[in-house]
Length: 120
Image (cartoon, rainbow, N blue to C red; front, side):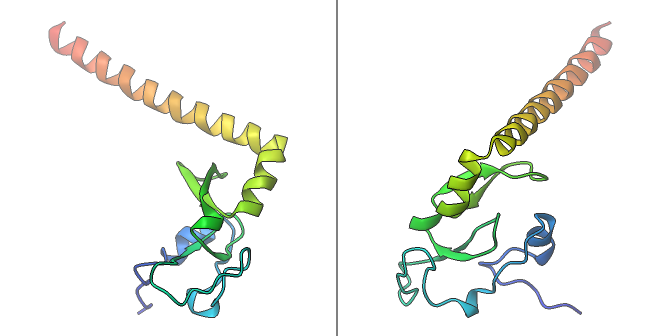
């Protein structure tokens, strides 16, 4: 049987769903962006959902809509900056948001039709 994921690291399939292999927590002692040491409990490790690096919370305080994801995901500052300047990424985010809104509207319309059938 495969080992269970640690509570601080999502299952491998979630990481691979984004097409990114995550760097294991235990391989990183310092944030690669600000170089602060992960020696204290107050400085938590976070994975960038775009590049897979382990970074501190201060250096990954951004979220973006990534392709294939149904919600906004935590990303490191450099990936956020790249995403912010990438027009294709903006289009992907807009399309994803529109698809989510469309799905909600369709579900609401189905519910209304079912309710109308009860009274009708």
